[in-house]
Length: 322
Image (cartoon, rainbow, N blue to C red):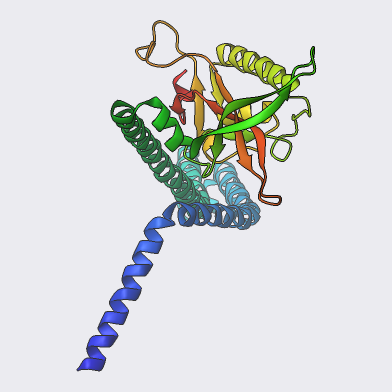
């Protein structure tokens, strides 16, 4: 009995996993099945076409017999067992065309049905994927709203400074250092407040802009700041001209590698007639600041430029709404 119960349980588990796997991969299964059905329909069509000549030749031979029979009756009505007028010949021609049409239908019915199945499977796969993508976009919007609500709650209770520290995984540190006056050469000790990144990654859009991460990095800090300011203007102009701008578009403009979230998140320009006008910034802004980041190899803290972006959020599917 125990063995039987174990076998039933094992079988149920296999069936359940198979059912779940099939449901999860149904778009791919339908797509490949549709492609296979389309290839099968093409092969069947080619085979049917090879038989068309036989049908045509039979039709031609029968037409010729009908014409000869009608001609013989006109010349010598007594030569045939029964009368065969031109009206009889015309009726036989109609029957022949119907029979020939039926033969063609039989030849191509299979390929046509299989091709219809192929199109149905491919369209069904697309429909399922479209539904899943819409659900994914809705999920992203819900998560983004919850995330913004959480941040606002942190700001309301602890202030914006704590929110930024939690967002970027940073902490403030006051350091003492010696500076030399370039005019008098006098040295003096000053204190400076630095923001040190300990656990970077809270913001989904923020990136560290340095020589390791960007191909547009310069060894001159003012030049980096100038370049980023120009790229910000360029990105804002592209947004107003094209209407849609993804985060990956901006990443590429400043030499950073694209990310998964950058493919679906970014900005959409809204006109005054848009119901969402005024809810978003309607421009591209680079939120930059200098921070200290520990070097994993040397252990020393290096001055690095942190860039965040004022993305509208998930803009997946926005293009079709323009």
